[in-house]
Image 1: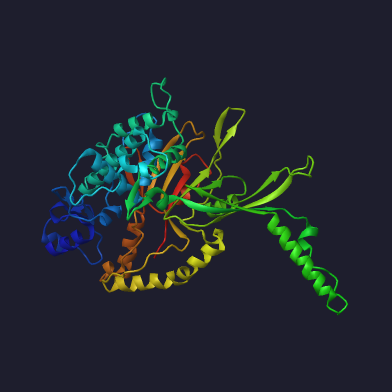
Image 2 (image 1 turned 120 degrees about the vertical axis):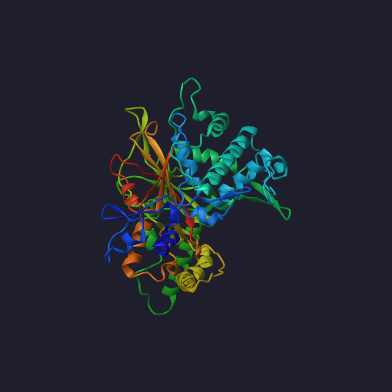
Length: 507
């Protein structure tokens, strides 16, 4: 029985002395009862997993183990309609580079001792960057969030989740209220409900001025490297069917070559006219938009629809008639993390408020931005797209042999869903926001299943799938299965997806 409990401890991380074994309603507490169990008997184990010991501020596990989501993180106290902040910050917590940079900034400003710590984000010396300088209130927001993230990380490492002992982010909400007073009504007794997307926009704008480091006499902007997308905008005048066909010709010529020369001249004129009527400009986006309407079925389609639009302009000589133009947006760069905002709220004159479109929008676990890139960008990432499947196969084989594979990480246009901010309710000024983060439990190390029967493997995989996501509902953190993506698609009064954060797939 001792050996059996040791095997259970290896699989579940529940120490032998904490295990309670039950079979057919009876406790199995000695070898005699254990030996009396018939073959294929079902045993239920009850017990709490071991606490991760923390010594001298350093956990016994590395960050990758903590980020796996096997341990529930502490919740955040709702300070009166502050779920928009709690859900947003928990969703962003999954962006490791973002989280660690803010923790680093907090440690520097708080004067805490940190092993081998060298802070590269010197906000006081950013005067030479050339961008608009952050205000003291904006810096306070960044430092406060960094302190909150450090508390979340430290408590998660202890492995002692307690719903009755959440973190109370008073410093964060106070800093936000000073930096973004437009989010608060100072005359109100409590905070009013806010739009999580508006908060994210303000936060990213501030942090872009703060999270800057100097490397080899060059400034690197972390927020831009992680989230920003450079976009090429091609605006073309719409052509009549006649002009579109111009140069095609239906005259086969008389065989002496004159007809060919005429067609060539017409083709050159068409090309010149096309260049003349084409305007190329550039912009930088911090996120992508997907308009929720009757034609939208999923997020990928929503992104595609918003990249093409028709605009009207008046031109000299056109009189009072508007001339239509096609405007196409193409990606010049691809970010490491992609924020997608589903525009569910629309202004209603009748109620003088923003009402919510509850239409169902399927959530894509993966996105592919390759079709929406410029031709130059497509040529750049095409080689890696062709090899990504073979590289993944090499990784699986190496894992089975207990090895690791060193690969060069390159973007290929593929993105995996990382976290979600959902909203429940019918108005932007009311309702409830919740954060959802992917745990990574759906990625299996097949080598760890060695020695199990196929039935045991399937059962373990099924158990892992029930912990594919973590729901961050203010003070309460809980596991959720992959099925939650179907529930969050919308179409009713349950929570529905509002903001998604995707991570670029590099292997």
